Amino acid sequence: MPIFTSEDKRMSLVNAASIVQDGMTIAIGGGLSWREPMALLRELIRQGRHNLHVVGTAHGVDVDLLCGAGAINVVEESYIGFEQDFGMAPNFRRACESGRVQVHDTCCHTIIQQLRAAEFGVPFLPVRSVQGTDFLRLHPEYKTMTCPFTGLPLVLVPALAPDVAIIHAQYGDAQGNLKILPPLVADLFFIRASRHVIASVEQLLPTDELRAMEPNVPYFWVESVVEVPYGAHPTSCYPFYAYDRAHLAEYYQAAQAGRDTFASEYLARYVFGPATHDDYLSRIGGQAKRQELESWKDGADAWRALFTAPEGAIA
Image 1 (cartoon, helix red, strand yellow):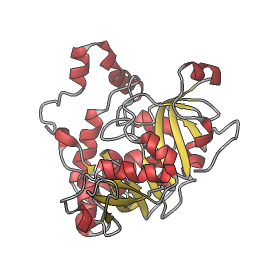
Image 2 (cartoon, helix red, strand yellow; image 1 turned 30 degrees about the vertical axis):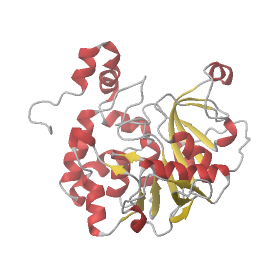
Image 3 (cartoon, helix red, strand yellow; image 1 turned 30 degrees about the horizontal axis):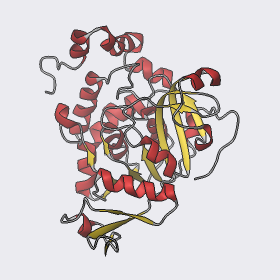
């Protein structure tokens, strides 16, 4: 991966997102409803990116949103969905069934090994976990061999070096050092394997203050950093805020209603309508919404209340 040594890598959302170009392979950090770089993804959609190849482990609203906006050509993931809360991902499913998106079904461990191969600078790494499955039929690029040491069969998976890793972290500094709090999901693998890394953060701190936190991503891996409070909304970013179940319910209802309805009722309101990220925060409920999502800290009852579906809502 390239080394980035600028002392000040702060950028606007617009400039950071412009590093991603049509047709690139992007790795999206976070996972499911946790710490996904949603503000950067919304900016990619506003800039009209398309034919993106998305790779990752298990994701939800982030990939579904990109599918609903027509930005994706290939999805190489192990799972896209809304888990037990809402169920399947409507935009993703519709895009796959229509043929607009190619599905390269994979498993988490295989993706991790492919990223490791890119990080190590080797053309492939062996796995054993996909033997006896249809993954070999779905991925003709995988090869098989007999281990020269044990005589056991192995599957060889090629290195995977995304063009850009898009990450949201809790803390960072102007140089690009990052502190990502657990669970790290596959973020460090994405960062080490990718050619470019763009990061949004909840808080930009002075370097000395961040150093005291023992950052786990060094500055020279990161090309740009953007301070975006609530940049993971509607997913969560603890310890700052929980995920926004009410907003996800609104999202899900619009996505289930079809492509045109999703475009008019969700994309127009929350992606193309807001002129700035602050405008987006106003549209989702402003300070009252932020206080609500931050109330998870007030105890178990407050935390449970955030995730209890109101009467008549999607269960």
